[in-house]
Length: 219
Image (cartoon, rainbow, N blue to C red; front, side, top):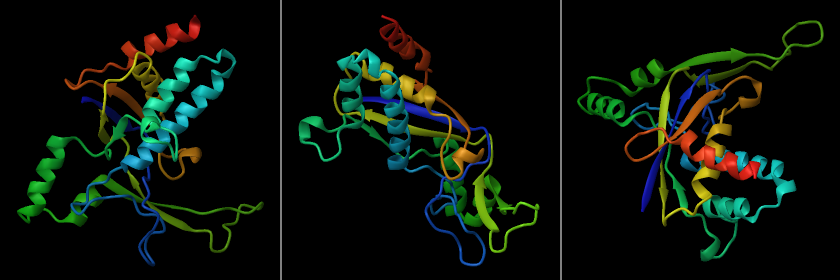
């Protein structure tokens, strides 16, 4: 079993939403665990990478190179497919770095920290409202959301159930380079991030594998 890590850092306030809020307080709450630590779910992360992959394949359509489509099938599978067409890539939740997380968990369990303190130290409350043509706030348009502060690091484990083929990692590296936004409001300035692909020794191998992708595209 081959393991890599996807690491990314928020460059702007981000809301990795959980689909609900807190009555009379927050319209959009971020995903966080019982210790108050925010995270991005593995299924959501896979969906975002798969979305970038689809955009890349669309751009490469004129080439009609089967290697790219095979690599995409290996990485993300085919919905409703048979066992032979299922993804070999499994993506964990993206969480804060392990050493930091362990220190927080220990503090909460020893009752030195409270969950609310942890959450409030890593996030903030933002308010926004829609304006009409005359610049007056629209009635009932005020929305309150929690955001994860910029410069917050996350990492997810990427596990291959079998050895990746020649083009799997190069295509994955291209998807990682294209992965620049996540979460609610990512098309409105929120959720900007920078990401990199690291090997099991935490060495950044994004460019190494992307060079293979570039050479194949230029052939």
